[in-house]
Amino acid sequence: MSVVVSDKWLEQRLENDPENIVVVDTRFELTDADAGRKAYLQGHIPQAVYLDLNKDLSDKAAKHGGSHPLPDMEMFTAKIGNIGIDHETTVVIYDQQNDMFAARLWWLLQYMGHEDVHLLDGGFEQWVKAGHEVTTEVPALKAKEFKPVFRENDVAHIEEVTEKLGHQSATLIDSRSRDRYLGKTEPLYIKAGHIPGAKNFFWKNVFDKNGKWKSAAELEKNFDSLSKDDVIIVSCGSGVSACPNVLALKSAGFENVKLYPGSFSDWISYDENEVETKEE
Image 1 (cartoon, rainbow, N blue to C red):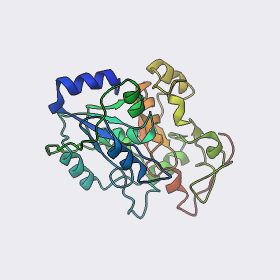
Image 2 (spheres, rainbow, N blue to C red):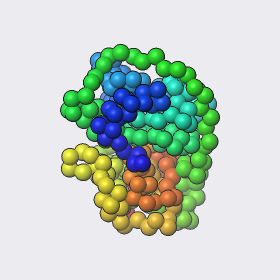
Image 3 (spheres, helix red, strand yellow):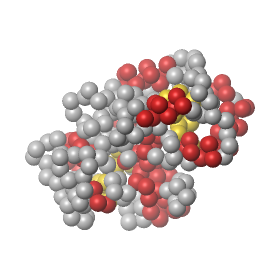
Image 4 (cartoon, rainbow, N blue to C red):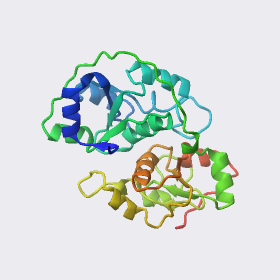
């Protein structure tokens, strides 16, 4: 079964097997940290529980790891269990549209070994457009025990990034917009540009002209300049918008794909690290 599911599939699953599915709303705005939770309270997909990028999907108190470090995994594991998820639970995650925040949670759950995790194609906007039910009711979920089985090969921290770039034993991609990659604009960080050696693959290019996920064949074409034999390390600004590219690469048949969670914001926190602004 595909990672990406349709609104009709989700509606049928909620009707036919509501006891073994958890729906997660991850809507968020980087410029307004409270906007996503407010949107959830104003209306969401039935049975959906809300998880917040800053409070749940990141550890903002961490001293290192960029501007959205991975959450404390012990605490995150407990949260996942508390909202009713174990390894037998089907999880469907949605964003406002096809955005980066849902993909961040997808990555975290698959990193923890969960196999049955999906993204709602088109997100909340598609759900509403199709005329499905929206509610303001916050569900009461039965807690379960989630036992993580971490896929450590799915993550690359700065030491591995530096080592592999130095030996040219991996390909690093930067998922941010072209202007940010080239250092022409930088709205968030004190330095502009990209990690030396990184190639630019804008994360929104994994969607078609209607904003839906591209097919596996279309995604393979999107990444046809990369070799499936290489280790691919995916970065962005803070390890969030890289996640759609991770999913897209895996959907296109790339097997050795790692997320650099700290990404550019972590890289520039070390004074000795250089920054590049030319095309690579």
